Length: 306
Image 1: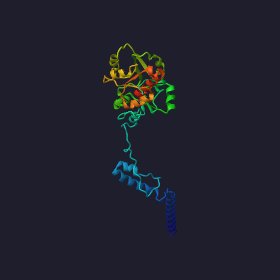
Image 2 (image 1 turned 90 degrees about the vertical axis):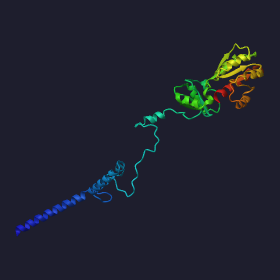
Image 3 (image 1 turned 45 degrees about the horizontal axis):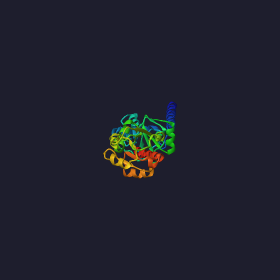
């Protein structure tokens, strides 16, 4: 009997120790905000992940929640889709997109009234010193060199600088036929006939203003002038005392559109009526050499930049 009591006592002690150990393990098990133990959370998450993986890989990655994340009754947000973004290339690292944004493109565009295209490799102060007041953007090639004085002049006038590639400039000229055949440099083809005034004294002032006068000589009649002017794509300037005769004879050629003016202000009005004019006739003996130079300079601005 005594031996049986000892066995019962041993069994009771063993049961108590097992119960104590189970209670200790359960007390030490990690708990979460909803009170579910770690093992149950793992089982539930595994079952949910398996069901999600059968639907689609995207839903598996989007619906899975790590054990340390607190559960929420809210509907999980759908994964962010990047298909709505406009991508210019298919490169994984975005190199194609960067290349497309490296230089502005002019495809399908035309030069605006406030844009000025200056297709020159070296831009100096004389090229921008006398720009029209309506110019707001100066377009130059990507490889063009600008002197510091040019940048200062553009900043002072509030003119933006845009660099276009050679292809963009070619496309821009194609889309803007009004200026496609017109040189951007301020070249003047200067003639003098039947006048005591020679245009040479005005050349230094014109050069300082960015113009490039080229004196044509050796002509004895208006018919010879007409054949020479018809070949030019620049602005023709004729000094003569026979203005009416010159207008009559020169305008006989369909490639010549000659006008005459007596002041820069009047010239602006005439240019609105005849925007395709390419020849200016002036009489220095009536206007004076100083006013004549101003009229020619204003005509060049309207011809090359309007």
